[in-house]
Length: 512
Image: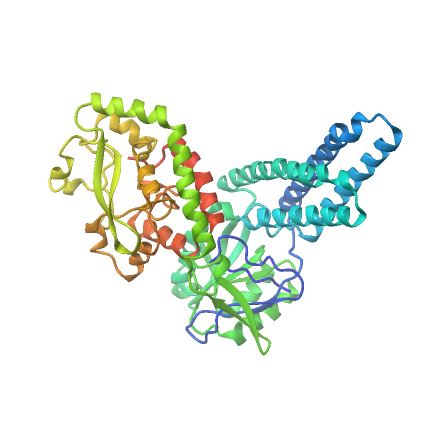
């Protein structure tokens, strides 16, 4: 039967195996579309099979190398006895078997999770933790003291090699997807606006691997014209099953549409059973909300999505504060020579070294944000005169070639070096390493209820806006990314953003 994917998640939602019912929120005609479908083995195309083989080959090759190194460099290698050598080989074989079984049980080679989202790495992490736990407990039960190097050396060593290897393969896959290759053809179903939104989202995020190749809308080919956002309209909502069976679509993605209730969607799921190569994906109407806030609960057999409130307290928040301050302190120590050199360069360029500006932080509290000065002294007084040249939307003011920027400041801005002094704000607790962009009071005064949710967390030196285009983003895109961060914050998301920030800063794209 078809598998439901949640279009609002940053990682594949159809990652549950077996006959487990998956669901969206309740809704009737004109409301958000719920679903009742069941996950089975996903059909795999040629490039997906090759990619899965490449990942599995990489994993197993690295495991063999680590086990071989453990045998060659382990304590038994120095004993030069046949019994010790035999014991070491048996320990290596047991370790390899435990890891392979852990990888199989965690389904780390499932095509649904490879190459997209963080779930691939979470499964790998759980598999290795479970394997190490089984080895440790087995060694404890059998009183085998020589197992420590295998549990605390070989398995972590395999993880240290496997994660970057998988990341490299993923980057190779993403580069192909950006060039229009290794994409899954998708039939979009829904109202004209919802289909257009889905098309734009898949085009903005080619790394996810979807390409909308056809659409079915309520008006069919007559009312919507021949295409939506360049995607051909192939029929109305009654023609979905026939279009899916006739075409080359691998996924039918159902977005909200008038008249689509639970019964009609279930009928579509049954009709698609005759096309086993087609999966069903459903937008639950909870866009930008995903991860740990979504839970599935059956009510008399009806699967329901439970949405928990966002939490910004507890142990995870405490850990974030510790990481922020410790990270800021370490970065300041490492960057001290750069900071001193930049301070001298800014001073020689004329005027003060630092620029301080009032920004709005967590829960609307204001603070003084500090940066290296990158503009001429008194630049704030010329904003009104340059208003006609503003290239930013909304309450922001941005100019790609701002005449107020100094020669030194242009270099500092391109590589975000002017923001290094914000580490002192992080140390003092007014900012975080990762968070929404710190807004000006004048910007906050124009905020609507949705944009004000950005103030639920501390602003950050970097964030989703930093790794997604920076100043090239529209105001709406900036707000959307900040809200996605607020709604789905986790420590893992922070780590992912910090990892991507280095590449975004070195490229200098969107910085001006």
